[in-house]
Image 1 (cartoon, rainbow, N blue to C red):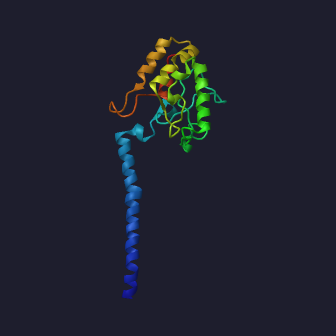
Image 2 (cartoon, rainbow, N blue to C red):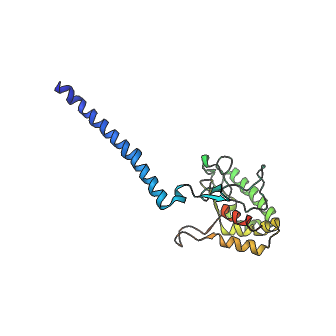
Image 3 (cartoon, rainbow, N blue to C red):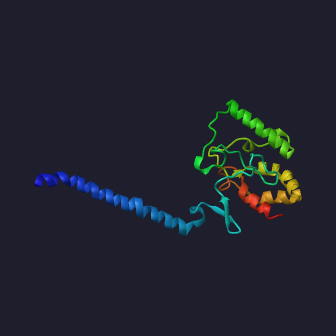
Length: 201
């Protein structure tokens, strides 16, 4: 009898440890992290959602397209960086194209995008910044460079019948500096910029 109890003891200890670990790590810890997140940074903890007139229109962390049903850029909106996530900006399929710099498909896509942007914005193809031509690693980048945003000002202003200087000033208001002044590059959040743009009309 003592022998059978001794045999079962390690299993009983392991079972109790598993139950305790499940309660602490699977229930208490996630609830604690959730609670702290809701107290300290509720907007970020809930996905940095952006609302307009009480309706959620997107997240400040996830890019989205401003194109028609055929994928053509809508001239009245600032355009986002290209996306290779699913059919484009699919948060369930975050990914880049994984093409190398000499991949013929990538080169062809870049040339096609360059020609389309040059025509739509009436600019020299050589002036188009690289973030306008290539997808990010996640495919969900919500930002573009200030250079790409400035390049689009004339088109957007013309499509909306706005003063280009007013649209240019709006872009400058939404330029976010590098983190801590030196980490990364300045960026512009396209969704936030387009929401502010709609309010100018």
